[in-house]
Length: 155
Length: 264
Image (cartoon, rainbow over all chains, first blue to last red; front, side, top):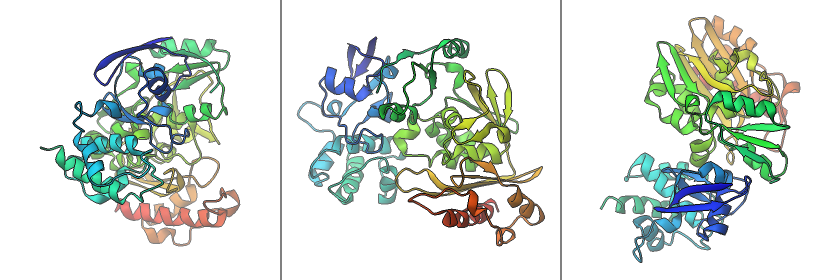
């Protein structure tokens, strides 16, 4: 079946099987490999992208369900060579080690800002990250990065 | 995932027609349970009928003392709804603590109650608040809807349209959650209504159910102390690596007492 959607501001079309997951369409067909598959059991959050402005696990949505939707992936955040403030905050605060979970962490961080604003306390960030798993960092610097990234987005 | 035919009808009538004519069809709402199940090849429907494009299944309407939530309303929308927060704050809080934020953006009330996971949250609210489940054919009383583990009163090709929740005088939901999945190890929903106290338990047994003995105790004295001697039947409790039957029975009382206290 044919799907037409908007990905990172550009029109994207493709021929997919009914069973193609959104994450596989993004990675395999559009070659947007920044979105990761960490667990494939809908738990880890490495595959979080924005669909019509809301965070979703792209491994738990069919590509067909995204037909007509506006999708933003980690590749859609930077402005050329200039990182998005949330990305820059992860870099500045050592908010990653292996980096596998990072795309999902950044997208979920933006979703937290959308819902809770730019002044975030650590408890809110920790609670709202309960769908994103990191096995390296212990979360300390991820929480710090999201709080700082959120503040930086106000500038 | 095994292959299947995908359909995206624009109306309930069209969806009903598709499911009735499918060899082994499945309706999908948010897909937060069905898709993982299909990825594990634990389900292999011939046809998946996506209810996501049916406008008449969405939305929240408060009319007098009835809060109507469309079947396809995501948990995040219920949690963030000012109208639900005002009318039944316990219901908004319940929706806001299902799964995680990304799951709440896709998962829906209709999908949750149709799936009837024994540890799901919404069934407790539907039962305790005395809600009415409206389908494309009839109205089903909340207390009659959940019939067993992953079983409901729905016919194979029946579609939930909306759930009507009467506004209680006070209500609270307390759950002891699995810290990873946020499913209820035990959850108790207590409602104080004009018709008396109502209680429902989820997570503890094979299916969410009304707790009549708890209601009788609360009818005499609506206070946590009234449940001090309450004993949930250990032999009916679930037992797994997260909690033994004895522990779940204990949690039923503790969660119920906390919910009663929160109603005050």
